[in-house]
Length: 113
Length: 115
Image (tube, rainbow over the protein chains, first blue to last red):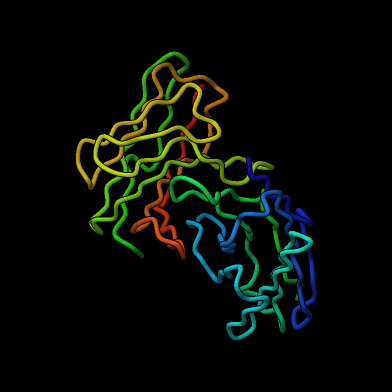
């Protein structure tokens, strides 16, 4: 079945710098890759997603890239701000059967003042 | 936030007791999911439902059962709680299966402690 690996588990960056979180997946048939953000004590919420027919997608300071050949995708946050501090989860869909996704283990991002 | 509520929000129980967590949605979404979140493990799927009375197992289903008698309610039952089931439980919903897939909306979570 699908396996999603996420790195690093913890990341600290200076405010204003960029942050990159990387994920790999195992099933080459996966075609939907969402990213969720979970602030402390809150529920996970979708921040961006990408489908396999595109290689990159941007939304203001957030971008996601996908390399299907290498089976990896990454989240890029530019000009980081204190409110970016959270746990970020990548995920990949299970391409057959019902509408399920498998999550990575998460990255805790700390934005340092 | 999508119309998803979970009850109770916090529960402390003893080993061996039965526990039922409830997820209620007002979005009329077809798919409902139960996840558990543990440090170092991320979000793991316990069970999911693709319609009334239609349920299936996820990756960590042992020790859990579910029921869905109405579109809006999805119940998670721990028949005999164990300390290893101490966790934060999230319910999620999505509208339907489609070729482009749909966002999963999460409930606020239930923190369960099994002593």
